[in-house]
Length: 155
Image (cartoon, rainbow, N blue to C red):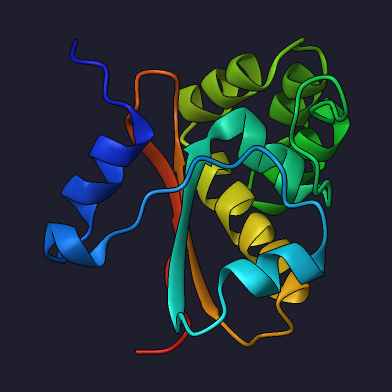
């Protein structure tokens, strides 16, 4: 299995020339002002990251650093339920200890938890920029493979 880093994955998924893609590592969306400043003059951005980091953003955390926020497994279980998971699966997810384990349980049962996390993370990010920028979210697993996506809302 080939492991991809997120920037390599994003470049492969997006159909843009390399000069049009600006990759920025970011562990913190500390405030709406920071995000608004960093996107000024940019009509669209793609947020791409690991399932755990984007699960934190989906839950409303803006500081994604491991020392300042934790993945809310109960939130992931509720999100899985809203994505069609049975109560048995949501209980299994609640019993997991990590975001990666929760994702595996959901995948095993064909529940698109990655897409649900992407959609919720997109909502959180769009709220921070008051809709001034169109935002797409791509969620990847630990192997760097895409497991969820919420596309741009504007064509």
